[in-house]
Image 1 (tube, rainbow, N blue to C red):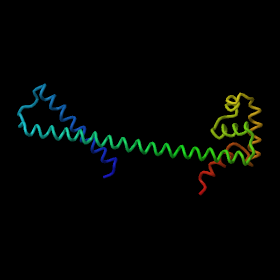
Image 2: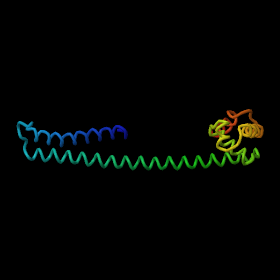
Image 3: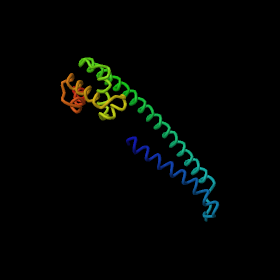
Image 4: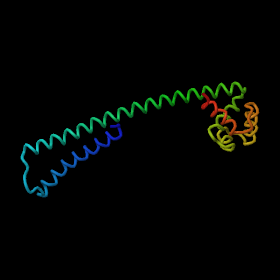
Length: 159
């Protein structure tokens, strides 16, 4: 049985156990029980329901811890990938001999900002951003933003 089905089964067992306790209280309050059950059977049912709730809680805690560990591992992996990608960007920018301003414009372009948004962020004119973009494309040997982006995507998916 896989984890998903096991967790579903445990949830059903917990719901059943909780319903047992709630139904006992409701039946007692409203006098719904017509024939009393033996105290031994009642105690066994309550012990079983309590054990079911404890097991469900325990397994839920284990599942939560496992999920937290997986999330931490994924976040660490993402940090490593981001760091490696940033290093790769810097290497490419060095190869192309981009100025500080051109590096900023190239990074903002790769992030998907428009010319006007880049101008706003950099507090410069759109004409300046366009001129810097053209210099970037020339130095990188591409004809536009999509080709610039594709250079980095291609680097990521190559063996």
